[in-house]
Image: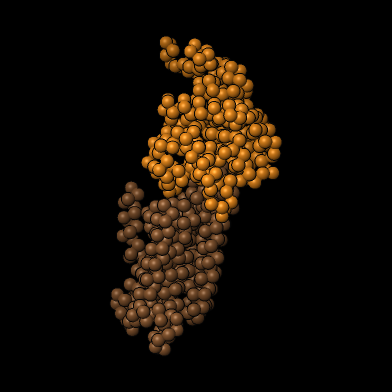
Length: 329
Length: 263
């Protein structure tokens, strides 16, 4: 039994690593896997080393981190809010981040860092706002998951309205920049972004894995969870904030990449993993694999142009999701 | 032992409290049943016990310690509660579900060990769910699910067991075997507190009955004390007779038909 599980993990990690090597080797200049590995170690042709180390590796690693962050965030939220349709973007995180980024564009911010910070601030404000709305709407200030979900959706809708108003009379350049960002991309990534996001994913994801057993119990419902000794409100709030932090960090790094947080936990569950500790860890690996694969598709389908990454993940995600819905029925 | 002392609970700014000065205790080695019409405050009592509803006045004590002085996990180690409502968001196997009963006994990092596995297995055997341990919770019948929930509560290995309407969805045989299980648990020294509508079964198995009406205790004592036709007629606002069951000797209630002259 344990050996069986170990094999699963080993196979999943091997698939991710192989995909990463292939992704690093694929592009305008094709590089053989062996050359890729050599270049990672610093050996071989200097130009190849530069392409691999400075251009493609940060991009692939960022894609993997974004996928891991969104997958973990989605897995934790679905369990805590007891809803298979919950995902980080449904909770106003995306809307808030987009408002932040659009404001940054409107103010002619051009640096990657400034837009990222604005997006993160927007995401954080939206999450706090959703929590406050849920608290005001909930009976006696209790964090009812349905109220929380609804508050997130409302904040998201409000944010979308703000974006449309902001972009209605904006110059073409701003609209284009904002739109591209809203469709998600890991192009032109720096090692700095990779470093920042990996910090968030390690700390935020690690904390979610640590509290995963509480999520197992929360998924039973408020009353059973309370009967089993969980402080339902505090625990829900903690996991909500951690998940939002993770999602906000990925949005700040790569824009909006939809469907990953929604479908990845379902893929892991379909593999028979139901406890949240392995589920969240598995969602990190599968999420990373999915986004690296989607990015590979996004930049190879129509070279030299690129498809928006968020659109590719959605195109890959929608059929899967519909199949899931059918199976659930 | 669970002791409720002068418990007052109010929902929001409601004029009438849901529980109004309720006092009684569920002692070790006994089955204590709380009964009463719909809306009499039975489930509110359970919600107060699991801290989903705060007390306006009064106190709840577990083994002599006030609920406020215990951490939620500590109280879950002492009292296992199966609330009325429960619907897992995602299906899992019965075995995985029962294992969640070990949550209060494990740290967040601690992996379930042999003791936990044994406790889970024992609980499944006692509740009669061991034979479908590997089935998924979404494939269980209402009765099987109810028994799985009791198994999860037993896996907590608490000294007190609290059940809110545990016989809902159970057929006659499962209903009887559940009450027999509760009886044997009480005999082994557990405090069993039961919220139930099943007056006849409660009268047969419970050592003491607490009758609630509009959030107040209107009757308490042995089944013979509480199963009095005038009292029950007043509380349930329905004509009824209470007789002694000739086969088992327990008080037995029969509601009458209001419109028919022939009972």
